[in-house]
Length: 210
Length: 210
DNA sequence: GTTTGACTTGACCAAACGGTCAATTAGCCG
DNA sequence: CGGCTAATTGACCGTTTGGTCAAGTCAAAC
Image (cartoon, rainbow over all chains, first blue to last red; front, side, top):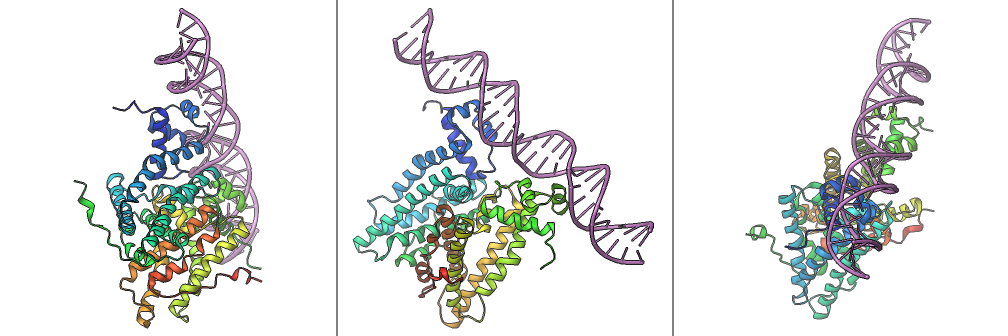
């Protein structure tokens, strides 16, 4: 058993969940404290404000979940096109799972939060910008490698990566808005056309969790 | 001079601006009343709640601005591919103008609001869903017409329209998050590749407002 | 065994929140 | 003019908000 999760960690993870499920504005310090079973004084011992907790929570989510997941999906051991297929499987499966476990499709927490706080919470917006650009960097690097290996002929990898990433985030957000995971299912065709390759992600694997 | 704008109309338009600039959660009834120069009692004479105003404001924006703009962009007099080019010009120019006039790139109000309130404000979310699907319908109809005219050979217009729309909304939201209008500039290539056609929107026309 | 410093607690605060209401005014129709 | 309704006003309500603070706990370092 790991050391009993400290109040600080509980606050971070509760904040991530709460923002993801609702929104930054709809989450209050009191509600976070209650869900995390932490008293208000302790909250302000660890974090100087609500927005400071949000920034730390994004960092926590990125370092402990998103980055490791991406490092696995974009494993250098796999051919570039296979990585893209795994990325699409990842987004689709996560939407399905999210609906089953939380009762709603929630989309991408970084993107949602970024859109909400772009004006008005500059430190939060800066953190989101940084994370999203790093995310997009995985795509760009893979396009470059595809070019180098001769699998792809992308003339402007940076711009292409931005378009692909916009499609992913856009689809994911549509899935959240309509609460429909199928909205992220059908863009592998379009993804393939943008990079000029045929992709065949396995989008049936809803049951392979058994 | 039109009849002096009624309090109701002032509330609607102030609400649209405020939500667009900030977010639903960051906008208070008091601040709306102050900006619109309307007293609180009048607010609740016209609208039964803050969220009811937001729903009405979305409708107002759609009927009086977005729908007319789209009807012009997607004019039946133009060939389908030309309509797509105008759509891309529209999004790019609007980002540029927005930055110049409001000091920030604000993206799509429907999409931003939808992502924020998908969970928690069901009536708002339903209105956003409806508007976004109507918007996407313009794309789908144009794909169908392109097929019929022989300009395009899209096998699944509904899904393709969804992908294109996700790319547009995704790019626009990225532009908001990074406060950078150039993020919506470079997807005409990708757009064209998805529909299998070459598009050449005029993305230089920042100055043609003179 | 005392000192230290990180952590916890619960009471407290002013301001802001969404919303209500009785009373008043303005505009229109007969 | 009187009468009716829609619109307007500003005071008011209880709750929740983000944030503060003095007082206390506790384990480890000295």
